Image (tube, rainbow, N blue to C red; front, side, top):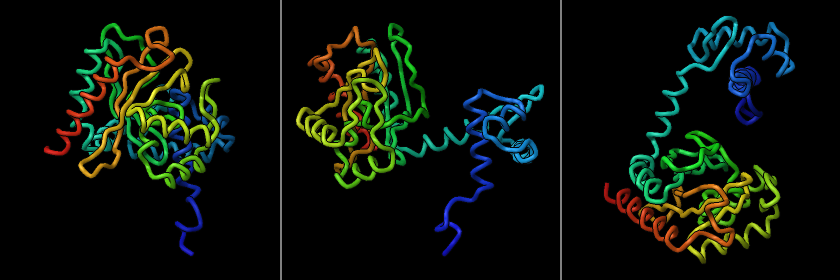
Length: 254
């Protein structure tokens, strides 16, 4: 049996835990990181020293922080997704036309990752930003992606991440989720009625490649007071479908 088959390498796991902790704490002293991870100061210090030498963290007045080197990695990873270049301008235009926030999301490792967001000047600030990970079952974007994945893959995602209830409206039952995914396929769009975040509603459509495979989703999201709980307006659905069509054409012929 190889090392990879046995499981993760503990040293690597600890370094990654430290990086994630620094992000979670928005920076921290050695003792704060050690306490957060329940590890000896000496162990954490060795990892911090190595990460500092390699440029993955910085140290300012004994406060360790994640460095901008991760921005380089993030931009590289995002640029590798063809959908980003094909959709960016259209997402900007969608935000302007609707007066709300427009978003582009892809699936990776069973979760949704925002690749790009744009907001009209009248849009209400939301907790969305590029790189943010979300559960697929709790968002309109995620539901339209799930609706066009093979059933076996959806079951794998449920087994991996579960169906946690993020609000009182979140679908947290597998049978109910599959019924919702069928409605998404019938309607041609997905809707999130305060299922991920209280006070926010969202409508989304899937983006497919030239082979008919889902590769992402776009959405318009905004405060619940500006979206009918019964679902998106016909005008909003038309805007989403029109934008979807343009993006898919650009991807197919670029």
